[in-house]
Each structure stands twice: as structure tokens, then as C-alpha cells.
Amino acid sequence: PSVAQQAEIESFQDHLSKSTRILALLGAGLSASSGLPTFRGAGGLWRTHDATDLATPEAFSRNPGLVWQFYSYRRHMALKAKPNPAHYALAELARQKDGFLTLSQNVDGLSPRAKHPEDRLKLLHGSLFDVKCFEFFCNYVERNNYTDPIVPALAIPTSEEDPTTTSALAVRELDISDERVYIPELDYEHLPKCPKCKRGLLRPGVVWFGEALPSGVLSDIDDWMKQKGKVDLIMVIGTSAKVYPAAGYVDAARAKGARVAVFNMDPNDVPASGLYEGDWFFQGDAAQILPEILK
Ligand code: BJW
Image 1: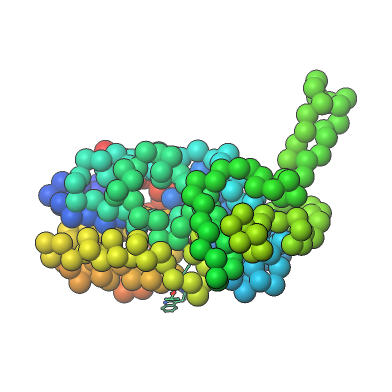
Image 2: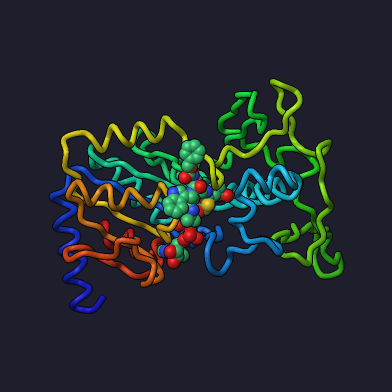
């Protein structure tokens, strides 16, 4: 870092060491260097679809097979991925500070796998590994379902490598995020069914556009916000901070006195209210800069 950057890092570290009530708002950029794509910008296309167009109840109603292929692929990739140094650095900080609360928009399970203390981690948008019934009359929910694929029809197709160039008969998974790779259309009978009502389809336990965030999560955060008044700091890490109500926690923390520290690859991706005097912006790959700045 340059002299100016070093001074910024030191002023942040000084504030962090004096802070007791701290929030961290996490987004997809935190997991980017674990190999998981973000939603907006490069990598936000899945086949011909904008990833956010598939993240709606309407898309699931219209084509549950396609939406399940997208989520089954993401479950598979998330299981293969490993938490990166930023997930571990945050988990360590959360352990050290009693008044720490992480608000994660990520559904990939990497913070839990980095042993982030569970009571200090709120999953705003659910988890890829929770599944629930899509029928409004049925309340079936299943947590931590890591079965991959969840039903045989959702297995990632493979190709056999040329046996003359490899010693064993290796099978290679095809990249079904690439529209040129053929995947069959799947309908009702191929997809996971609800074991409770036996009628509805199961769906991923994530929060889609137009859906409410989990009520228990929201009330836990409200309770935390109301405690002892002041918030010292909110760290905004690897998120475009464009999706609400998640992004609204930046201003909510500010209203309680918090200074804001943004960690992002893109200098334009600051919260909607901008940066104030006394805030920080650290540009770079979260997996690299966060462990350095937090150590
Ligand atoms: C790096 C990096 C590296 C890259 N290092 N950095 C107010 C105003 C306007 C609209 C609304 C509003 N309030 C509500 C709305 C509607 C809507 C909304 O916000 N729309 C906006 C898009 C305008 N919100 C909702 O619908 C929410 N529900 C709701 O409001 O309900 C109301 C209600 C109440 C009561 C009853 C019923 C309803 C729900 C929002 C759910 C969002 N769900 C998704 C999908 C989850 C499942 C899945 O994973 O598929 O959540 S959408 C998607 O966006 C996902 C993410 O969690 C979320 C945020 O994205 P994120 O993480 O910020 O990713 P990116 O790609 O945007 O950014 C990555 C960043 O990382 C970039 O900045 C990069 O530069 C950076 N980066 N590599 C560091 N290596």
C-alpha cells in the first residue's frame, strides 16, 4: 500500500480496535475468489438468463425445471468451493468481538463452513441448502439438505475424456452455465416433491425478489439495533448494495452513529447514500485485502 493507503488502513484499524458494536454486510464479492460468480456484472449470466431473472417466484412457476437446474448447479458449485481467507478472517473477528453481527446476503454456506459463530451470523437471503415446499398452503421446511444432486434428473451431465490421452477413463463434468452445453427440459415428474403435502414441488430456501426476508432474522437484527443505542462501525464487503432491505442496513447503522468501511473491487460500488467524511473505501479482492487489514 502507498503511504496514503497505509494511513487509511491504520485509521480504520484504530477505530476497529475501539469499536464494540460492529456490523458486517456481506455480498457475493466475498465468495468471488472461492470461484462462485456474482450476480451483477461479469459472471451474472447463467446460460442466456440474467441470474436475477431466475431468482423470482414467477420464474419458478413458469419453468421450475430451469430454475432448479440453476440452483442445483449452484448447490453443486458451492459444495465444491472452499471458504477463502476473507471468510476465515471475518469469522475470527466475529469470535473476538462480543458485539459483532454479520448480515450475509450470501446463500453459499461458506461463512458457516469457515466456522463463523452461528449466533453472530444472520442469513438475510436464506441458504441454498435449505429446501421448502413451494405451495402456499404447505409449511414444509428442511434445513441443511446437502444431497447433491437433490434428485437424479438434476445430476450435472458429464462427458468421457478421450481414453487415448488419459490413463484412466476420466469423466468430466460439463459446464451447464454455458448455453452451448445441452441440458434437457425438466418438468414436474423429474423434480423434488414435498414429502409432507405430496403435491407441491420443493424449492430452494432462498429469498427471491418480491419475497419477505425470514421474519426471525429481521426481528433478531431489529433487537440488536435497538440495544444500547450506538453502532460503531459497519463493514460493507463485496456487495453492490443495491438490493433492499439488505442495503438499507448501511443507513440504519449510520443513523445509530456508525462509520462505514467499504471493501470492494469496484470503486463505483459504494452504498446509495455515498461515503461520508470519516468513512473508508478499500479497493481490491476481499479475499486478499480483508485478512491483511483485519490482522
Ligand atoms: C468483489 C469481488 C472481490 C466482485 N472482492 N469485491 C426499495 C427500493 C427499490 C426496490 C426495492 C426496495 N425495497 C424492496 C425492493 C424490491 C427488491 C429490490 O431490492 N430490488 C432492487 C434490485 C431495486 N427487493 C426485494 O424484492 C426483497 N424483498 C422485499 O423487499 O420484500 C418485501 C415484502 C415484505 C413483506 C411481504 C412480502 C414482500 C427480496 C430481495 C431478495 C434478493 N434475492 C437475491 C437472490 C437470492 C437467491 C440466490 O442466490 O439466487 O439475493 S438477488 C441477489 O442480489 C442475491 C444477492 O444476495 C443480492 C445482492 O447481490 P450482491 O451480493 O450485492 O451481489 P452483486 O453481484 O450485486 O455485487 C457483487 C459485488 O462484489 C460488486 O460490487 C462487485 O464489485 C464486488 N466484487 N468481486 C470484493 N473479489
